[in-house]
Image: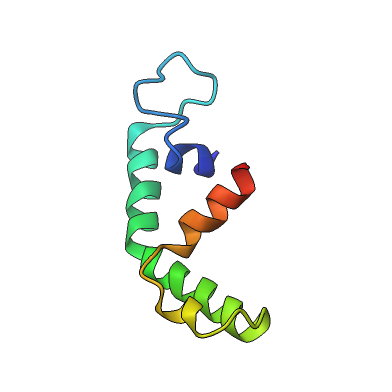
Length: 75
C-alpha cells in the first residue's frame, strides 16, 4: 500500500477506492520518503559496493540507484 502511494497508483482523488487512505497519511508517507531518500541511496550504494562488489563507479554515479532498481524490477 505504501509503495502504491509513493508510485502514485493510489492518489488522494481515489475517494471511491477500497484502498483509499486518509490524505494526511499519504502526505506523511511521501514526506518521510523524500526526507530519507538520500539515506536510502547511501545504503544502496554501500551495499552495492561492499556486498555486491559493483565497483567505485557505483559510488559516484549521479543517477538515483533506487530508480534503476525500480526500472529493473518493472521490466
